[in-house]
Length: 572
Image (cartoon, helix red, strand yellow):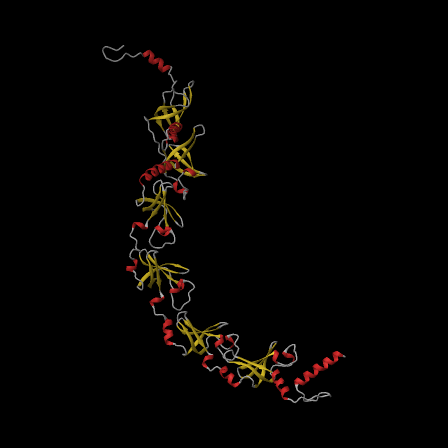
């Protein structure tokens, strides 16, 4: 009933006293969250009035932030968690942190149930992933759910804030598992679907380099990956994509092809600029001399950049007229400025053949003019091999004296029998082969060939005297004059069969023989001892001797008598 004079409702003091003496604390249940008012704050505790018989006491540490500052003051109203209450003595135990955790778990459950997103702070790395702080609750982020692909630097994500999806919650164990990858997959799928609607060949697109291989770069176009092949990166030749592109680099590219069935996209970078190979023959005609920069060395030559994006190849065989190179690095190095001559241009295949040696006159042409065949020259022996000697003629040009062109008469097994490196020799030019770059010399050609007069001096049928110089199983070598030797074959020694010529002859022995073959071209002089004996026998009158053989008989008579005695002994 209202008071007529004051206009205020009449107060039932009896009811108020009853409520004070017997308060109703039914709404303060253990395990629930309630509102409370801060009534006192000190270094150790904070007193909170929740309408119970007494205030609840909460450690001040629960209200401190990371910097150690207390975040509440007297009069503030906060949510607290009723840990325990005792109605008999009127005491109550409260927790500010547990209230926050309960509220965060409520929020997390709402995020999980409604497929929402929540922010969290990665605080540290642990085995298998990370610990994420979400409103004071520590959640686990598995390593496989951090990103769409493996993270190269796991520590780089610590102390960063990201958005997450909640995968699993267990209030009783306070376990929360979150994922960042799920969000990225959803975002990627959405971008891919949007991109597939508009993507077409010839389109200019933006992307980010996500993976670099030897053959190209995979580019994230926003939910869809495309391949930028190494051959489509630059008009000039590159050895590896890393020469042009780095991981994470933003790229502007052209769509070269797009297969909607497989979602494969081919991208190009060089196609965004004009093709430098167009009209290349007009700008760089065959025979032109130009300066370029060596960009790469390979076993077979050197690549030279003539214009931005245009390279030509100097084959190793086109680097020097005279030097036999094993590797281009013997002539040039990467970065060198070189002068070259254009030998050939193929615009369709984008190939240019270059020459370095053509910048200078061919020394072989000068040598051919300076040293015609028959010229006698003098040079230093630079190298000796089994087959001959190399003589220095001009810078980089050597002449070869074959072992067979050292002497007309001596059998030279190795040139070092007569010469050594550094000796100065005279020789005659025999052949100058400019095409095959061969310069052949001879020493023996400085003198006349002694075999030239042999057919006239020793005609077939004449008798010669000579000295045995060598005995072999197949006959005797007989020197008839200095440098001229003839061969008495074993079949031309005598009528008697000898096991070896050494049975009847020795080196240094003087003999007579008949010339039975002569050839200056073949350098052969065939001799016979047997035919001399046969001729002597034919010239003697036929005499029959009954008694023993007298002294002075010929070698043929002795051999014949010995044979007859042997036969007679066998018959007896």
